[in-house]
Structure formats: C-alpha cells, structure tokens
Length: 162
Image (cartoon, rainbow, N blue to C red; front, side, top):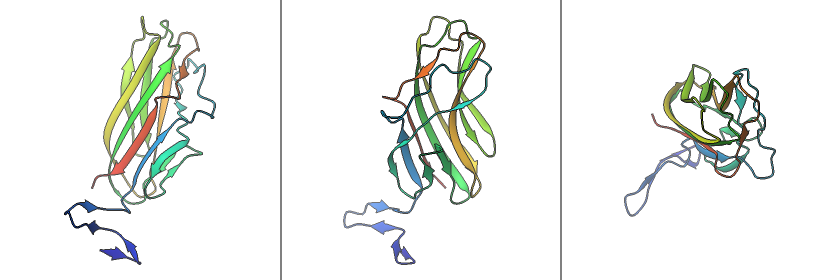
C-alpha cells in the first residue's frame, strides 16, 4: 500500500508485514557530548541529552533538543534506560521520569542509601495528541549535588502502537 508514492505498508514474499512510515526511534547519549554532571539537589528535572540517534524511522525525534514529537494522535510506547553514577547517599530521593505534554510519569524513584551507581529504567504506554512531546529527565531532592549520567549505556526509545 502506498500513499503519495511512499510505501506505507508492505507485505513481502515471506508474509512479513512492515510499516516503513510508522514513527519509531531510538537514541543514546553520544560519547562526544558532555554528559550531565552534578545534578542539582532541588528536585528540578534535568533533561537527559540523548543526542545520538540509532534510528529515527519517521524523523520525529529531535537530537538537539532530545525531544520526540508525536506526528499523529495515538498511543505511544516509550522506554528508557539511564545509568547514573556518583549517586549520593544523603539525597532524600532520586527519580527518573518521562515527561509528556499530557502528563509526567515518575517511573523509577529510589532512596539512594548505599547506592553509588543506579540504573533507572522505565516503560510506559502514553496517550499523545499530534504535536505532543516527550523527553526523559532526572531529578534529585536534597543531598550533595554530585550525580552524573553515564553515556555508554543510556537509551531512550519509542514507537506508535495504535
């Protein structure tokens, strides 16, 4: 099936169905971009700089603002994996969050006693309208402002489900 000469739905000879125009992306923190360091201790969310696109199937992810913009209204599956280092044990809490235009999803909240490294993982099915946006941020409440992000393993991905 095509639309405006672009293939929108393809069934190949094996019966596999692909949708080349379906919004889908995956981004990671680039090694050559300054990672987040010394996250403030006032619970303010700091946007994670996922600047290296692994793929961006419909050009809906902006790798300079680290923002996904929904091209159509629908349900979107988002996933993130964020390794933080130098986590301070004197913080009251640290949280990883998916922030969308419609609502925020606090997906991993920890009491960091005894932790110096922590992987924040989150997954959510979010309702989005056309032109709504999504980012991942990290926040720390109280304690020493020393937490850093690790660029080697942190990822953010999403795709249109329905």
